[in-house]
Length: 405
Image (cartoon, rainbow, N blue to C red; front, side, top):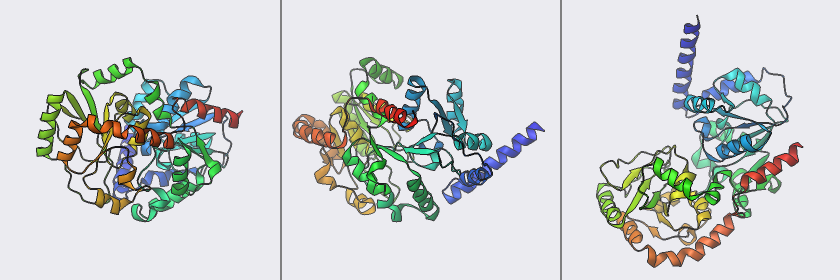
């Protein structure tokens, strides 16, 4: 009987996943929401905090760093909720409190009792249910954006179901974490939130960019099998969903790049966006593809120079004040498809390469341009990061203590 029930559950989950992919939304959330309406309990449990991230798929980001810190340094009852069996099993082995959101009745029960819920992307981070009116939502976000998002980009990006969910999420947010007044202005526009809903604390995941040690750097390099005497160049591009494009990253470019890297004793780490295609790099000596599941903050700690395009990762990297290069081979197309909050070419604090050859030339001549951009990096760093002390998590704890005690 038990085996039969297990097979039925497996088939139902398979069917839900199939339908969800076809509709580009998680049908499981609709089922969870319907089931949650049958619960009458709206009493929250004091100091119960629920965390989720990346649509329930990964243990990453601001939620992860705040969850680990609060679990260790506070008396709050912290629970991680996930849609990933692998994440569930890994956290269970480490004796963390974790719930699988497809375990519907248990997930609903604990979410209905939550005092505070922390998310980074949306309801998909946890589960879409009818929450208690006493439950508070804190959106930790997943970074400062250069490209337009949310209500500033709603018409172009979302289907009708996603629009409804986004609008419901925006209305449900009680507080949002930001790193500065400038970032707050962008999020106010993006989510249509009033000024009093923002907490300027800094992002929890970026504390490590200030607090890291030499030993931690060496440990990360050892895990990735990187040579200690080589400089690290990290390429972290954004996801291009809105259009077809021809990348400048082709075999000819990679061969030229690899020759340069070998000669100069540098390593080129390629970290694709989780939804982007992987580039085959196995045949090259100094070009390495990194799993998108690896914590970006760990990579930024060991990176001597960041290469990106339109990704907000450079706002985080500014905390290190190290050099940044912008590889924007499809700038005009991307600008037309997405739009930016700022004039891209005059705003970014680093040289712009529009071809592979230009990128290699810029990397060869870093000493010629690095000094030129030092001042600009500091100006934009100060504009987008109010704090540079690595104490974002402590500030969030202080906020919670004031609210709950």
